[in-house]
Length: 107
Image (cartoon, rainbow, N blue to C red):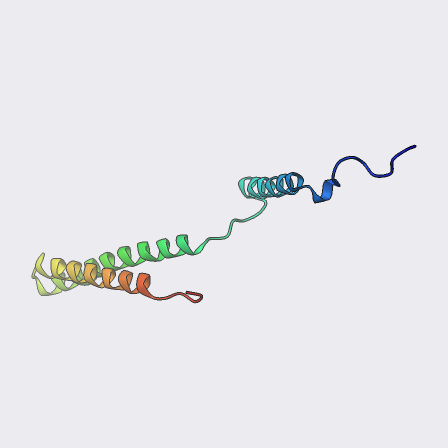
């Protein structure tokens, strides 16, 4: 009188077991990233953030270098530096606006 079929659903079809396995796999991936055995890939948001930061720094630095150099040679101290800093800021913000309003593939 032994039953071949247990009274419960098979373990591989239970939603709770599947959910538990997914959570364990996610935790194991996070632990591998934390330990440094797996590199975490950058997502689109962090790439865009780094690009925006580079545009801001590049615009300011480029304007300062060009303006400072022209001021040094033309003896017009601080006027060209201020003008090119302003121009660098304008160019940086224009590039940032262009970056963020461009449609990405899949949109």
